[in-house]
Length: 190
Image (cartoon, rainbow, N blue to C red; front, side, top):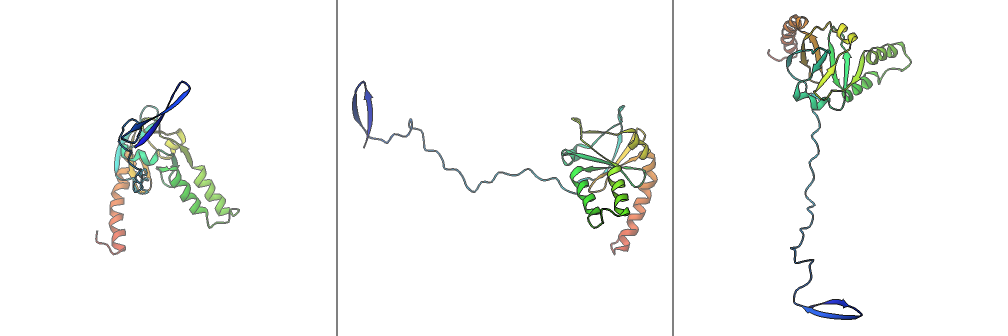
């Protein structure tokens, strides 16, 4: 069928073959699949911070984030002084989006906008989880939250709140009672 051209010295020659040459008699390669799409990495859920976790700060005042929530915080963390005596732990992108949304309709030169910027940016600190999934808490953040070594991490959907364990007990009791009232006001049975 096919002739194979050979070179030997200065003479050219042709031999006859019964089969086509396919690179060492290997089977043909499958064509690439066009219907296969590599799976993208799942995006973190915006409301993934759930539960109440009783934790202890270590000797260097570091808080260990629960393992199930570390993926959402791996891109960066913003530690925020709450409006009460607690701290908030936000994914950095989420916190930045909320701050921008809060400031969007305000005149940037107005006294209200400047005061709100001072509060939102001045009471926050960007940080990262260390290799063990911990966040270091500085002295001013510990003082704002009145935090001792025993703390409670409370999931609020978009972020975690960090409370001192003794401060959390009465707040938790009132939160349960208030939740029932709020649900009833929306027409939901408690």
